[in-house]
Amino acid sequence: MRLGVLDIGSNTVHLLVVDARVGGAPSPAASLKRELRLAEHLDDDGRMTRSGIDALIDMVDASRDFAEQSGCSKVLPFVTSALREAINCDDVVAECKEETGVELRVLSGTDEARATFLAARRWFGWSAGTLSVFDIGGGSLEIAAGRDEEPEIAFSVPVGAGRMAREFGPTNLTEIRRYVRAEIGSVIGDLLRRGPYEKAVATSKTFRTLGRITGTLPADAGPYVRRVLEREKLSEAVEMIAAMPVEKRSNLPGVSAGRSAQLLAGAVVAESVMFLAGMEEVILCPWALREGIILNYLDHLEYFADGNLKARKLGSRMKLGGQDVLVD
Image (cartoon, rainbow, N blue to C red; front, top):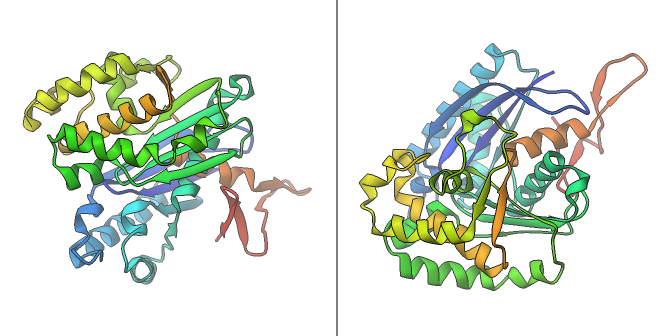
């Protein structure tokens, strides 16, 4: 079947179209992406502004049309921290459904961490042993760990790259590092108490970009190349980025102009969590939240005697990261 997963993040809205089957790996088929920077459309009261709502609805409408033209049988839409934290989130979701017919699912930070963990587990397999998994988004850092497909612990820390850049600016290394380490330090004991872990894994655009800056192979080398981010090299990169004018950062490998301002903050978050968790390196995983959502959906399909695929219902809901969410 062909599925679309619509990821409405703090920086980017991304529709990924994949060919998927139960028991198989999702294969990317098409993609539509826009940088909406929804987190910057929150006003002083924490409400999503009219301009942000209109931009979101326009993109959801375009994504629905793109998915239909691409032959998708279903689209799995979800929103993360920027809209989740808006005080008018429910109103925005309702308006979007009325205008486009698409009902957005609001994921908690814990759900994000669990779905990302599932993606990493499936990518590396059971032979990887116990995993600790880290993902840096625009609004938050997700951490999950365990030996099974459902992590033993999963939590979210509000120190995303975009959030830290907005709060402290694009160049304030000392203040960003002090704040981020205090926030991560307040929860990292929950991770350490369940260690040690046989493999430390990092996902997300931020980690992949930092990998490119420190010497990992580019995406066109293929997804199966082993890519490792070393803390020592990352710390050197942090100092280099801090000393570099923001407008020059897009000259670094893998850095887009749109993400230049939050590059330092993302690097500090990565360096801080690796330092506090005692990791000398993390292995970069090409699968992350979107793949986790797709895999979770496929897990809740079953074959019936007539050969048709149907969604297994839990009432009218299915399990996502240990919690119930609507199937349709």
